[in-house]
Amino acid sequence: MSRSAWDAAHLRATGAAETSGAFRTLTILFSDIKDFTPLSERTPAPKVVSMLNYYFDAMVKIVMRNGGTIDKFVG
Image 1: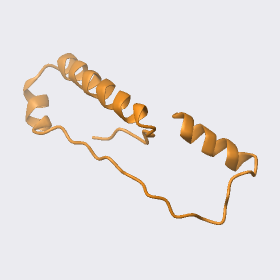
Image 2 (image 1 turned 180 degrees about the horizontal axis):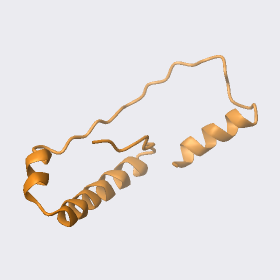
Image 3 (image 1 turned 90 degrees about the vertical axis):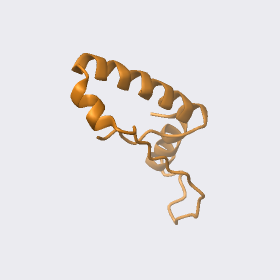
C-alpha cells in the first residue's frame, strides 16, 4: 500500500478525514502489453512469468515514485 493510501485510510478510520466530498484531479493508468496472448501461447510459462515480473517491477516503481497507488493487476 502506498504511503498516500495509508494516510487516507488512517484519516478516515480516525474520523479526521473530510467526508463531505471533494473534487480532485486524478490520473488513471491502464497499461496493456501488445500481442501478449500470442506471445504467451508460444512461450514457456516460466519465461512468461519472468517477463511479467520484469514488466510489473518497472511499472510499479514508476507509479510509486510518482505517488501513485496500485489497485490491481488483471489480465
